[in-house]
Every structure is written in structure tokens, then in C-alpha cells.
Image: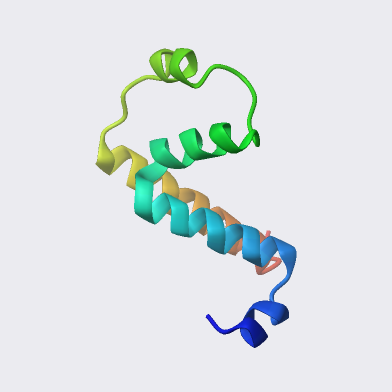
Length: 79
């Protein structure tokens, strides 16, 4: 991305693109760990990870698709 294109983006868009890039490179767990390392999150990553139930990839993808559909639905103003 060129600097002139970057200047056109809002802070929210830069944040979303950055999170997406880190998530693509490290995966969801890596993204969370990265945020903890930056100090953007608080708590004990290792302890919280152990408390989370294991989720298979298909369930995770289905949840993400559902969330995306809900966001698109609410952004379109539909009720």
C-alpha cells in the first residue's frame, strides 16, 4: 500500500487491516498473544488459553461467517 493510500484510511480501517494482517500471519491465537505482548490486552494469556474450550476449525469458520453476516445485515440498515 502506498503512503498516499494509507493517508486516505481512517484509524479504524488501519486498525482492521493491521489486525487482519497479523491474524493472517499468526492465526487467531497468535493475534491474541501479539496483542497481549503489545499491552493492548490485560490478563494472563496462558491461563485464559487453558480456560477456553477447544474449537475445531469448521466451528470457528461457521462462527466467523455468522458474525460477518450479522455485521453486513446491521450495516445495511435492515432489521
